[in-house]
Image (cartoon, rainbow, N blue to C red):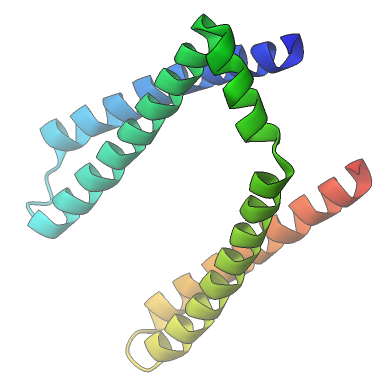
Length: 143
């Protein structure tokens, strides 16, 4: 249980750092956004607001688990439950496949309208594939 307690403390530090970064970017977007495009302003503030919200909830849950032994045990069981781990892996695999097909279809459609957008989607597709292969190689050697 002490190992899990250390993991939660590390998560608190990471959440704190990310919260400060996201909040700084949020304030910068609000104060400095010169694009005057409502849609880009809404996208940036919405994404950063969502990231701030997720970071806040994760911080709160980790802090709560560290204060109370019952919450710590419950959190440990939830994070190390084999069913939850399997669900997470299956969800990630399915999401990855759907995203890659979406990138491919969007790139093909974009090639009819804009070469710049098509190339950007293609490069994004390649970067995601390289990252996926890199993490696959890393974990296959590690496990």
